[in-house]
Amino acid sequence: MRAHPAGPRHGEILAPIGAPPQPENAEALHALDAQVWPLGASRSDGTGLTQRSVSIAGVDVRDLAAEFGTPLFILDEADFRTRAAAFRSAYDDPTVPADVFYAGKAFLSAHVVRWVQEEGLNLDVCSGGELLTAVRAGFPGERIAFHGNNKSISELELALESGVGRFVIDSFEEIVRLAEAAERYGVVANVLVRVTVGVEAHTHEFIATAHEDQKFGLSLAGGAAEEAVRRIVKLPSLHLAGLHSHIGSQIFDTAGFEISAHRLVSLAASIRDEHGIEVAEIDLGGGMGIAYGPDDDPMKASDMADLLRGIVVKECAALGLALPRLAVEPGRAIVGPSMITLYEVGTVKVVDLGAGHSRHYVSVDGGMSDNIRTALYDAEYTVRLVSRVSDARAVLSRVVGRHCESGDIVVRDCWLPEDLSSGDLLAVAATGAYCRAMASNYNHVPRPPVVAVREGRTQLVLRRETTDDLLALDAGL
Image 1 (cartoon, rainbow, N blue to C red):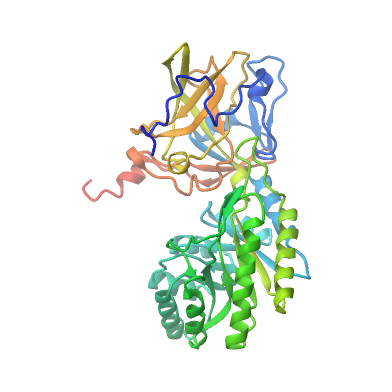
Image 2 (cartoon, rainbow, N blue to C red):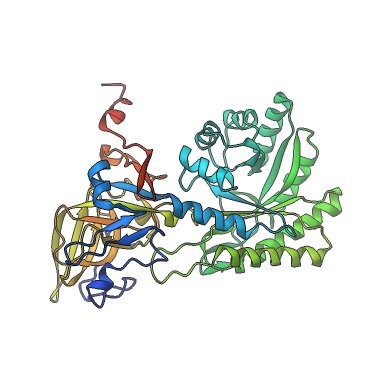
């Protein structure tokens, strides 16, 4: 536990552990790392240091701020489509047929649903709201997988009415709910059993011991997964389509997947031996990592695909199983790098840390209401001054929000120009996943809009909420 929600004090050292190294010069301070920023991000080629603003897909961020206001989520459509196409291509191998599922929970809107469909991906949803967004945007139900640990009867009925192709079963109770609902509708629902395989993977690390103590899935070690299969195969309104697992997020290698696949394939062999059923699909989940900073080194989609295919082929060969259809869920890896958040600087406060050191607290017009991940997960982000460049010296800074919480921090440790002042525009990279999706109205602050940019054109994806929107929900007004 931290002693204070704002984090540890750094008065004794200039650059705290975990902070990026101090930039060597003004060019380094304003550089846009191609691995972190969207494909369309670039600085203009001005001659003066006060020029050279950043553009996304040919649209100057200053023009976007003037038209749509700040805070503002800016989505590079070409970047999104390029990443989606890369994943589709990576798994387009006839020897091991595979489906790629875009994670609706990362960020979802009607425009994004259509892009996902056009790029040939499938879609996973976790609620009736996400499902309804997909259906109303015209996404084919048979290409949707419905996740969730507590799907309601009304959500299951909506999914059945919409022709959802896969239900990821998460509990014994859900087996009963879905079977009864499917029987009422006169259909057979395809189900995958979500198996807790005892592997947890995040970033560069994985642990392959007991991790069954969680709300998701049915334990393999405790026998719950096999019991779920026994119950499903006895119900005529359910069809066992396959097995599913999810081992973590922000994963940069395949070590955890190798153990997970081994355990899923072993379970598939047991199902064949006990029930005479060949498991037709194995979904390895996802959580593929992205670069939030220059030190992050995510795998290419094609390299990850080659390794995952090889793992499944090897495990099936060892047990004499026919190759199942493979499914993967890249998670944040498609939309995460495609979006940035644009803020306007308000108050800049210099706090004396003692011993001759100070920190610049840079307050912006958003915060934890549009990006809760820093407060929840100690997430680290890259931030840049984007409305201009400066030759002022770089100072240790903390970008904070406008909310009435000490933990309202957007970027905990970063370097920004000393002359930063009110009205400047900052952009935080790689905010496409779980930022707008998890946004709140804390302090009665309306949620920001999302604008897509492509080839110099803009398209409103989600409009800005207004105070009137919020007050319309108040039955006392």
